[in-house]
Image (tube, rainbow, N blue to C red; front, side, top):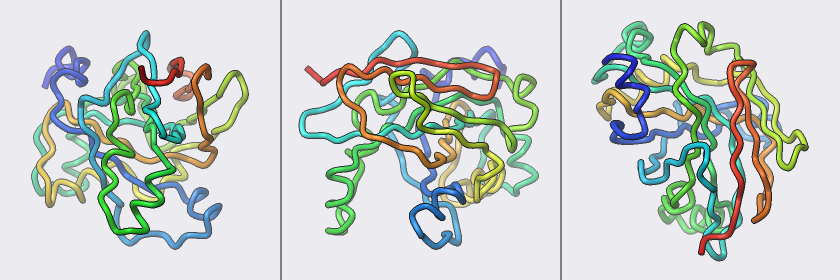
Length: 218
């Protein structure tokens, strides 16, 4: 698909695929064993927002921010190899995987679905589209996040347990990925509770930064 079309991934993509616990430093911090395969979840495309819009916290939600490299799928992927997956990367973005943590913990303990914790409205703020030429080495790029000017997250994609081609190949063996779909590749440590009145600023190396205000959902 053409770059101009992929730049509209928020409008043309049909799904957002998330990867959990994909940073070695996060696993170490939480004293968790590394999973054998990527941990996959979905967010609806209705959770997208872009700069100029506001993150809204639903009533009785406790929300953390997770700063992530987003990968925009460039062509249809069904049962692809890792080498084929590399050729299917259409571009990138910076993303925040906003996550409700209060109910998530309880729902997990009860063995219940936790889609609402990941998929509520405004839970996927994203930056502009980043071309592969702008990000030639996605396996070694810094991610950072500040809350009200205070640094809380700082990591590098070299710390990812599963690299981008591995994730794409794994998902494609069970779920067809389509042009414009977004893959959220996981977050380094440093998630904190956010609240109305906060301002979240995040960056992708020296390529770009983005900023989102936070308010309670009306």
